[in-house]
Length: 169
Image (cartoon, rainbow, N blue to C red; front, side, top):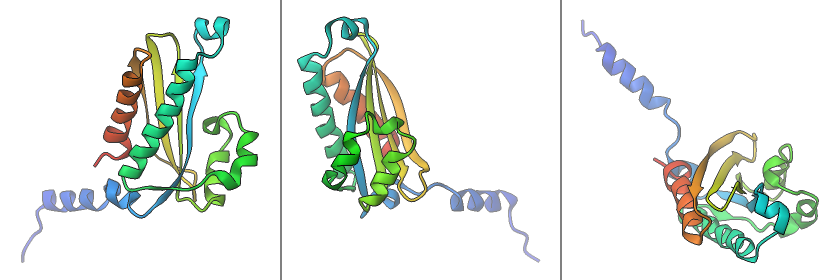
């Protein structure tokens, strides 16, 4: 009688329960990307208010993340039909799941939210999260600290999350 190797059985079991590969998650799927939201907790922001370069940088990051999501295989849905609902929401990342509900109403498979938090001109954080629009479950997501308040540091932080988390194999 032939006996199966326990190591082989274990290896096969792990192979069967691995999370879906990035291609399986994203190819042919759609996402509602709600843009990057700016949170300025710095003393500078409290005293001087919004800076034009940072406002422009948020728009640049929106475009950069959207391009990265498309390059990863996602189709981004038009948020226009949800404009009135989104106008009432300050930050879709912190709205008790409204991002998921809106994504579902728009026919998207996923909700994607992003934030940039400024602590100072040296210390900032970028967060990007992907949730399943059907269940609300977080599928992928990460926060990274970046050093320096420049276009390049912001792009580098977003690129790291997209490459090493969102679209990681």
